[in-house]
Image (cartoon, rainbow over all chains, first blue to last red; front, top):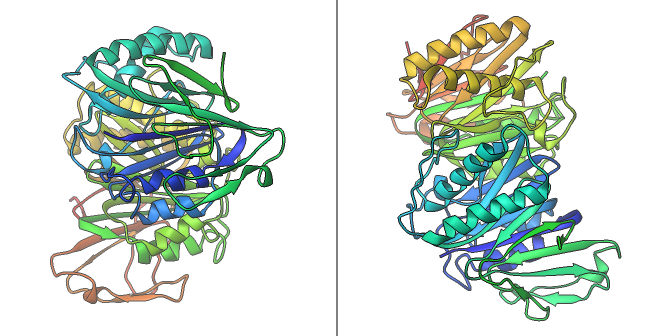
Length: 255
Length: 255
């Protein structure tokens, strides 16, 4: 299986602290060695880094840990291959354009015998169940809403239907963002927390690194971190219920 | 205006030498300061780096100059904004998926009053004439060939028609690749060379760097470099004729 990491914020924030702990699981504290990737929205643009090397050893992952790229929506993934060979085209997150926006998608899980017909404009480049599911989701959203993006609440409802149907085929924990919101669905395992004023100190579970967030934030900052397994030991992580989908905007889940 | 750099090879080759000279034009020896980008095919996957910083100052460009990423098809761009603000979503190259392949596109030039109707699945995310033209090209290729990619020669013929029509609106030097071939079109200025056995020494025009290619190649290697303005002073560059389109495969133009 794989692990997911997402970040959603009310102001552009770097993910150096969380990614450092997460990337350590890509070959050091855990065995998610079969590639990794991360995508940062910057306005409507996307910085997209994928690599078939283990995150713990990759020079590009080292850059991400060193250069504080700021973003309001980030999705990262470390891969342990279940379907699809170890190759760049099979590394998550995947990126496609729909309605003049980039969509970024990453999946943790395994879909069995999942091959719905793709008769729209989205086709997988690699051979993972994940990319097939992503293409299917975009195809069905485009079929349902036509040529323009619907309001977020409508989109979330449509997405919940689609994702529930796909999850009949297996494990389907996912993160998805179009740069206006970050959608997270839990099939088996996903956690989140919201960091906000008053900020405290936190220490990574996987690395010898701690940060006092009070020193690097303003009282108005708010950051949601979504991750397969909690990244810190001294913060309270909330576990998603199986089948739960949340939409994060401005650093918090939308009620 | 901007500058383009492309590389097409018969075996995966790094672009460190050429990109080093090219990136120097992004803020040091020339004033293409408004962002840059590069995309490397690795099989059917793509590594895509874009940045709104000047290439000469960007830490990500520094990484590209240090880490020898090997690829058979590379497209890079340094931007001097004419249309569209300085922002990540306006940095070339642009990437879209069509027929289960990624397509990478970069443009040097300026299209005036160019706004054909986009009624297919490809929409610009940013607001450049270039991304609009790229979406239009993919839309028309999909309209003409339907659901599957045609043979390269047919694709090139269709592309030549489309590009000639678009070039009626202004300057349209471009590089385009789907990871199986690299297409280059010259409207006003584009050069190329083919490096092959017997290899010689070359020195960058923009940087104090030289390489003896005989030391880093095998006799079977072949590499085509396509660029707006020649990168070296001691090699013979061939100038494209205005209106000329070439398809590069395995490190050489296809006759």
